[in-house]
Length: 90
Image 1 (cartoon, helix red, strand yellow):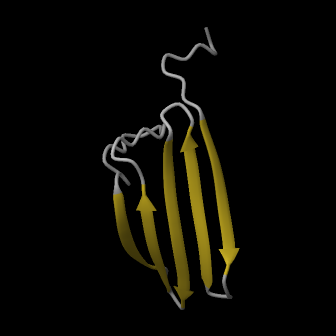
Image 2 (cartoon, rainbow, N blue to C red; image 1 turned 90 degrees about the horizontal axis):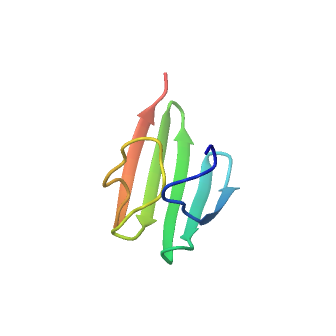
Image 3 (cartoon, rainbow, N blue to C red; image 1 turned 180 degrees about the vertical axis):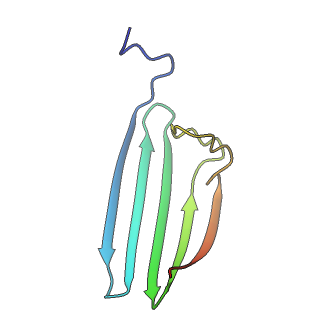
């Protein structure tokens, strides 16, 4: 029973990435859950400056987040929110 799944899901997704300039990049990911009628949205802006990388991320997802994953990501990116991350590369 290699292909017999207990809880099958049907997702369609699209990923877009656009370099805005030499140092900037915009990307977006949109998933559609056909079984439950949910839409998952994620947009990200990245800027690289010398040894620093800045990431601004925004998302708008349902409260009952059911995207399949291999790790325990309970509560990650549920609802609506914004994240800012700064990375130093040496």
